[in-house]
Image (tube, rainbow over all chains, first blue to last red):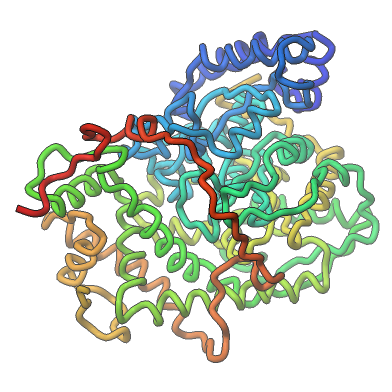
Length: 490
Length: 109
């Protein structure tokens, strides 16, 4: 059961080999056994999960008035604690929201509820999704199931680690500069950041609204496709949600790789990539070449500027989005203050952690009078050049592949006090969201330390099905995605 | 408006400038934190200063991630009330509420 794909679990539920209550109980026990060590979940409410499971069992049995069962009916799914849930508190990994329960559900939650999936709990994350290591959470760092002394990546580190440790069959995440793909790579699981606008941001606590995109984290590409079928869809309450015809993300899983052109950007294979990462990625590329794909040398010349662009735009948007946390309408309020301005300042000083405050200050600075043109507008112009690099590249190839991250999982604390080093770790995942493009990470091997390596597959706008198809073909021939981590044996 | 001292050419900030930014951001930075925060912020500003080396004359700023790909529709909706009254539910998480109103420290004497 622990290593089953979603379609295997779904078949077992349909054949009554297991009930949703049993399945949910099983994963709750696994969470109970491992969470003390890995700290992947912030909130678990067993009664709430089991109640949903019992409704799912009735739905599978054709009872009740909740519609026909679907592939996800009765399957427990963990949600990043950035998605608002009416039934479970939503903290976004922050002291600011440590006691907050949302009066409404995120659109993604509504869609999983409508599909009959069970909410397994809310996963730990970098505070307000700002981080690449899941160390900035108010609720303590998440640990990597492959080596508990190491980080799982971030910011969706709790979701990725929960799937890696088989504490959840699948999970949701969000990606602003790599927060789905990088932790997926560092924990040996699969994760997809969809094209901007496919998954509604309604009820997903905002970090940088022009970049934020929800997406699935699972063991394999086939699971991601099933999850996307549930997650993606138009929602009028998100002004950037795209109105598109229904898309079956499973439709290309059996695609033929013959003639597929894989672009290899020189900038993604330069210095600074760990040898173990390079070796595993090269071997995966050889597999694709051996199965009919053609590789094409391409160039994404502004890759080196993606991190600087991101660290202007994301903090600028964050400083605006996080101005809502003022100690008046919800969340933390300081106990002692002299007047309204003092209350704001103390509330925000206490409620936000170091990295969040740092980014709000950077964002405030780059948007301030006299600096707006030099920083913010400049970054928006370079953003266009980065998008153009991809447009030129996709004229010559169907998919782009390279490492998801230049390194495997690093030690806890190794970069915690050096924000610039932490930021540079996201050099390969930041470009895609700047251009609004989809990106996928799948496991493709291990380094000499036995830590997982991620292969990134990027595609053109709305090319998710093709990306998932290529990944699925690879996973049919390899078993990296089925390996269980040391700290959480099967 | 509070103007920040110093021309844009000077890309590092002083502790004094940081205090003014912190005031704008409504975040208290204590005197003890000030030197460390200034150093780290200047590290980040050093990183983003790399942008200045690139000539972007004639390039339009891009604010929507899909606008390079297609004309992004700006959707309008009918001007109708669609939300029910959920004041009580929304105020449940507020730090201080009285009679349906949010309480804040006195602003006007």
